[in-house]
Image 1 (tube, one colour):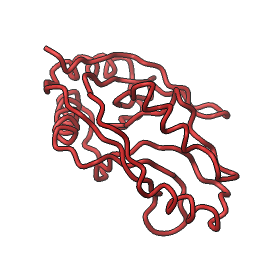
Image 2: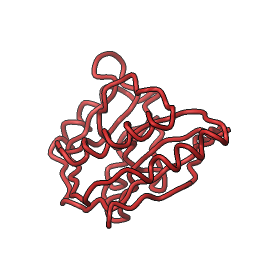
Image 3: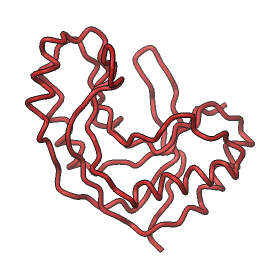
Length: 179
């Protein structure tokens, strides 16, 4: 069995910039640089046959390369006790097109549709016992965070294995947006 997701890998300089935000909040689980990514679609558990169908279906996704801009910080859920700290993504129609095409390819491979709205973000940390008195100032202090545009030329299929120390992601397949 495979636990799969489709994501955009971030350039090393972007990961370094995001890593520079990863301080100042006690009692949080910061995401390591090698785990930073933008999830396009979480798929979940599949068997070997469906894995092959998914990997093949994603080869049909076509789109020109496009630029992406990361900006702002926030938390999920929007109401109640925050559990995730994230960096946002500037509105991008090509990113939404890519997401729709990935979703369509997955549907062709027999994957049920996603039940929740796509909210593009990069998870920076998981908040367990973060003091709320420190979270507000962190969000305010980084509200204007914004990176230079970077080009998206490919997306990836990853498997994820859950361990007591967190998820271990393995790159399974890369799909180029270049002709």
